[in-house]
Structure formats: structure tokens, C-alpha cells
Image (cartoon, rainbow, N blue to C red; front, side):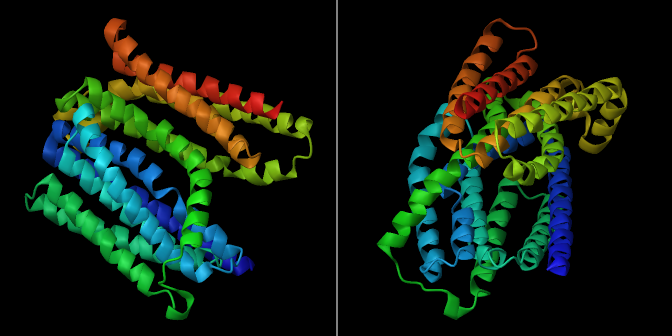
Length: 401
């Protein structure tokens, strides 16, 4: 058991490193070769597709994993019926996507391709649920590592050969489709039933609607800013702002990953005093997270030279914007803590309502800041994250009392 745990941990860590390294490498060469204007459109379209895709796939990979782990009597039917639900939701999403991209002034072909790629990626994880439900994360990690390296190399060749950015996204979709086929056909035939089953679909959909609540809430916190920035900015300015916001997100994800230790701690909590004690301890994490934006602010000159050498002169202002936007990091960390507590204690519905409300208010904040404020992009990002931090805190406390 210990050896299996060690092996899983090693491969999961390796997978995360490969994903982070390849993704950072790709957005760097995309930015440098295609420029800030094209990267801005790329980032904004991708963020919009992530929001729509998250709602469409309903976290069915997690639902299937949970059902298989519990040895559900309909386990063999899960794969086919989950695929059908995801593809059905994709078609419905495409209908809504067309007017939405026009409203938000995004590139339609790019957003559609990103959405299709997102859906295929979820279908891959549905297939890989077969292994993960058995406690085998090595097989799934190996497939994801191989897929990521192949895509990274292929995309690099396409960029160096002067192909359009749309070609890169098409190549990504083809890669994901190919690896979906690989993931599905490596499942033993005896463990898959390709028949459609209405009852199984209904159960999957009901579980998915519950599971997607917190997933979509997290996606809103991560991606909404870049989508909203696309409403007010275009050209190279949007690219610079998108890069700055993406740096905030990368650092946030690295810090937030350590918060997973909350789950075992919360499971040991027997009463309100125990929960309160854990939250008091986590205030130190909130306060310590201020070190990162303060340190970056003092070293922003060095960071500026680094960004220019990596990305080109189009991105000379990335360091300046990032040095201010990073001050939203502590509030985002606190919001993440609230989300984890709400998940662990089954307050997902109230949490989702609060974040949806906070997202609507964030839209208002963006419009207000861009009508009357100085440095509206920076203020919009920071104030909207502060409001979401406040509303998630209120939601948790109200649910727990």
C-alpha cells in the first residue's frame, strides 16, 4: 500500500511539473512569436471556453471515478453514458456560444475549438477514471505526461514553421481526440458496456449537477477576470493584462495546492470549536501570503527585464501590472480556504450562490472602475477578488451557524 502511494505521488508530481513546464513554455513562445495582441485574444477566448466547458461537462469524470470506486452495479455502463451526456452538452453549449462570443467580442472559431478541446479532455479523464478508481494514478499520469510532451513538441514545430495560432489549437484538439481513443480502448472490453441506459444517464446528470457547483465556482474565480478584461481592452493591452492575471493565477495555484491538507484536518474536527481553531491557524497562511506581492513589488525592475527577454518588448508593462495585481493573492487564498471548508462540510449550494452573486457584482465593479476609476484594470481585479473573499466568508459563516 505504501509503495503504491509513493509511486502515485511521484507520478502525479511529475505530471504536474510537466504540465506546468510545457504550458509555460507554450504561452511564452506564443506570446513572443505572435505578439501581445494575439496572445490577448488567445487567453480571453480560452478563459471563456473554460467557463462554458466547466458547466457543460458537469465534472462527470469525478462522478464516474466516485461511482467506480464504490463498485456501483452500473459501473460498466458509466463510460458510454457519460460520453453521450458530455457530447450532448457540448452541442447545447455551441448554440449558446455563438451569441455569447459576439456579445463579449471574442474570436468565434478560436473559442469553439478551445471548447471542443476542453470537452475531449474531460472525456479522457472519464476513461482514465477506470484506473484512478482502483487507486492507480500511475497509468493516467503516464498518458497525460506523454500527451502533454507530444502536444508541446508539435505546437513548438508549428510555431517555428510559421503556422497560424489557429493551427496550434486544431493540433491540440486532434491530440486530445487521439488520446481519448487511447484512454478508452485501453480499458478491458469486459469492463465496458456500450449500451445506452436512461437510468444511468439520469443518475450521472443528477450527481454531476451537484459536483459541478464547486468546480464552476473555482473556475469563475480563476477565469472571470480575463473574460471581463476582454470587454474593456483589446490589442496588446489585453495581452499584457492577460499575462499579468495569468501570473497571479499560477502563483495562486502553487500556494493553494498546499491547502489540500485541510481535508484530513477537517475530517478530524468534531465540533465548532475544532473548526474555528483550524480557521484561526489558517489566518497565518493568509497573512504570510502577503510576502509574495511585497517581494515582487520590490524586485519588479529585475522581473521587467526578465519578461522583456522572454516575451519581447510588447510585454514591457507586464511586471508593472503584476506588481499591483499580485496584491489580490492573499484574498484569493482566503476565498480558496472558504471553498475547501464549504466543500468538506457540505455547504456547496450556498457557496455557489454566493460566488455567482459575487461574479455578478464583479461585472458591476469592472464597469464602475472603468467609468470613474484610475488604473481601472488593477482596481477591478483587486476589488472583485476582495468582494468574492468577503462573500465566501459570509456564506461559510452563515451556513455553519
